Picture 1: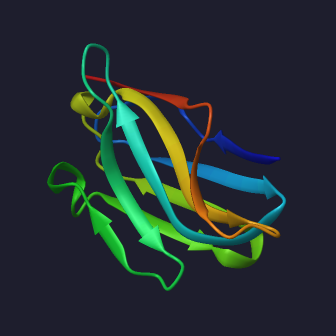
Picture 2 (picture 1 turned 120 degrees about the horizontal axis):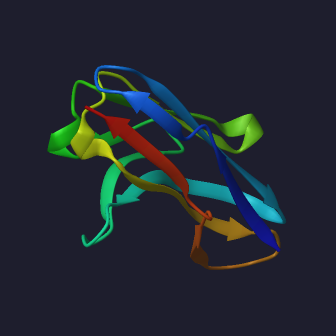
Amino acid sequence: QVQLVESGGGLVQAGGSLRLSCAASGSIFKINVMAWYRQAPGKQRELVAGITSGGSTNYADSVKGRFTISRDNAKNTVYLQMNSLKPEDTAVYYCNALLTRTGGAYEYSYWGQGTQVTVSS
């Protein structure tokens, strides 16, 4: 059993900051990639940022320079620091992990339950 639990969402004014956290737990052998996605009402889920176990990162163009993804491999935790937030950042943010379970041979994708981020103008 593997669980991803997100925290840190909430309501913030435009220009403000929030920090999201996502902790993975369970029978995990290795987490290869951790990422944050978001889904706004009426829109498709989109990749916000991703980070490999080696620390390589990638970002959506819309958040470059404002958001920073990081991870603590010892804690199986990924973070998303969001600065200079805009109303268009309002969405449910989901954590995703590509990982290999203990005793497993293949990599699978797991999702958290999502956390709401609302940015008021």
